[in-house]
Length: 435
Ligand code: GLY
Ligand code: MN
Ligand code: MN
Image (cartoon, rainbow, N blue to C red; front, top):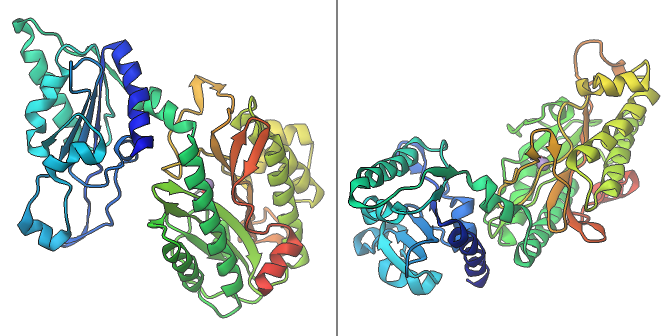
């Protein structure tokens, strides 16, 4: 529980200074169909500050309350319900279990929240995600306003968590880095297993099953996002998730998958030949993407920016596309007009953390890209996707899709690739496919 407590302490110091209150609500439970629910996954901010994974819960952190600085709302014990869905922490045990000052039943949230908002200058809370939660919060604010003739005030500023909690989440602490390393190790093992599993005649979902088997049997709760197992032309569809095609001799297979371990995501892409040997055309495209990815990793260090890394990738990609005739003309114009986008339409990096596309601002001011700092984790994932149809490319290149993605921790000296456990040089990939 200590990492959670120390994060609350850090946040509370700021809340005290700003006479502010922060409010965090659990993720909603979602029905899948009829009375069957989706797998429950706690809201990342609430988990980051408490370690509580129960639905229908909330946290108030108060910089102004004389004694109740941290207030948890949980579902009350209910022996009848608990027979069906398992034990709840309950109101009585919550303070000790989670190290908060006080706990209430979530049924009391409607009454307690306005009390806590009273006399705060600022409210830090997320709006615009879940209408019922917006109504709950704005209703509490309205109640507090309604008491203004009794000598109290109410928060006149609502601050998005991105400016506060997400700044904290963007720079990972030691526990988070260690957990991400472990998630990356398990995900790498899953990818290796999928590579070995691949062969002409297998179905994409058999490779997905290999990933899932490794993730779950190593203790990861779930995939961090819907896994992509895209063979042949499916590899040119960026978010292909059907995963049901049969692998053919001569196909490339693009796998983009990562597990979520203790609420931390890994996100790896590898592309390999179904039959264990790259064709000459596949090899050329692969080598461009790999050169771009290695150049980007080389450029990742404190002080640089995600935009600068992306620019480096675009240069290497443009050179490669010129070299193999997929683009013609002047390099400067290709870069200026971003003509490579017809084959490389996405960006190189996103933050990685509790959410696979993790929180944190990429631009702190409009068009001012933030410098990287030690403790940030980002993906490096260039790709090339040659359309199957049309006349953008010579026949031999059509339908080839390649993405290579690693998770990279920014360190004081430069960076550490957390996902180095999966091969990516052509020789190593071919060897891994052979098992
Ligand atoms: N798998 C999602 C991504 O690579 O961003
Ligand atoms: Mn990614
Ligand atoms: Mn990915």
